[in-house]
Each structure stands twice: as C-alpha cells, then as structure tokens.
Length: 309
Image (cartoon, rainbow, N blue to C red; front, side, top):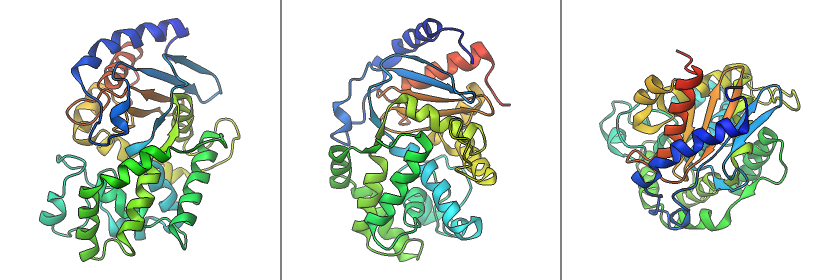
C-alpha cells in the first residue's frame, strides 16, 4: 500500500484538488455537465483485501470510456483474439478519442484500437446475445462479478442523455457499417453503448475492478478467475498504450501504470500484483482526462515509485 494512513492520502488529494479550476466538466453530455467540478475522491484497493480512501468515495459516477476495457475483456472471452482483432486494430492513435479521420485514411478502414470510440463501438457490437437487452444483461452481470456488488446498475438519466446526443457515434457506426466492421441495427447499438457507458459506481468499486486486473483476472475477494490471464494482459497493455486518450504517451512517462479514463472524470489505475486505484474527479483537461485525477496519480507515482517501467 503506498500511503500508510488515510490522512496521508487525503493530503495528496487536497494538493491535487488545486488544479480542478483549470479544467471543465463534460457538458457536451448534458447530464455529465451537472457534476461538481471541484470533486475529487480516490480509493486504493490492495490485492490482499485492504483499502485506503480519501475524498467523498461514496459519490457515484458513470464509467464512460472505462467501460471499453471491460467490454473488450468480455468480447475476447466471447470470441477469442483472431475474430476480435479482425474487426479492430491494436495500434495507438494521436487523434482525439472520437475522431473519424483514421477510419477514412487508414489502409484497412477499421478502427485502430478498442479504446477510441470507433473501436469501442465495434467491440460492443460483438457482445454475444440475441437482443440488445440480453447483451446488456450479460454485460451488467459481468461488472457485478468484477465489483462483487450486485447493486451495480445503470444511471438511466445519463444513458438517455448520451443516446440523445450521440450524433458523432452514429456517424462512426454508419461509416463502419459500410465496410462491414459492424452489423445489425445502428440505433440498437447506440442504445447498448449508451447504457454500457452509463454503468454507475463509486471509487471503491472501480478500485476493486483494478485489483482484479492487478491479479491477472483473479478477484481478490472471491479468488475466482473472472478473466483469463492472457486476456487481462491484453487489456492492461491497451491501457498503457491507449488508455488515456491521446495523452497516453506522456502519462506512461510521468505516471507509468496501466490506466483508463472516462469523461465522467473516472480513472481506473493498476499497479500489477499490488493494488487497483479508483479515482473520480469530473473536471477534465483538454484531452478529456480528469485533470485532478492525473495530478493525483503523478503525486502518488512520484512519491511511491509506482511506475512499472
């Protein structure tokens, strides 16, 4: 455990909170725009089942793009690597997470990786199930097992807000449908994806999911192997190369741990074989990452030498 006391962690949170005024909440999704910009909370869940926290960790938030890692794990379990990576690539991109540019200019006209919106939509399209409702139930059940929390559910207000404003995601879907990357009804896919992103939890739940990945897919409480080791490794690798949008390279140098952010202000971090980190700080930088969350991870990594490199 990096910090010896909750008070020590709280001091780092207060230091990181000083930068919240330099960012802004994601108001392009109206429901997310209601968040309080100066919020910051963190939970650190050790693989030996101890936890430290600071800030208002009971305050809930939606996963947003953090869900991309979890959907990728589920779909790899559903279909295996060859099928999944015939539809989506493995390469980082320097473009914004919602860019359509590479779909048109990349030679194979498939999304470069599963962490950008185009790739995530292609992955969500591969969840097994005969209806969107069946697919969503399978996904929620998977998240409940990862958090060991049967109360995990969808924030319907956020899901509806995302569905109503998802014009660029619809464009990405139709572009990929043209090339056979996705199949089926686009509106059903947008509905499923909006609900996937709107899964709601607090920092401790997120830290527990991080701890599962820290243990190569084994849950620290139940000791159940929820994700095969090789698939957990693939997910962690994508988090290093693509997890912090087009700031992933700088983050790898300055912090140096696998991490995935979401525009709600959540960040899931992993220190392999040690602990998972769950952060919520809704004030975002220009890349779409929690500005105080990244500052906090900088402070933690520097003080406790967390970098895996």
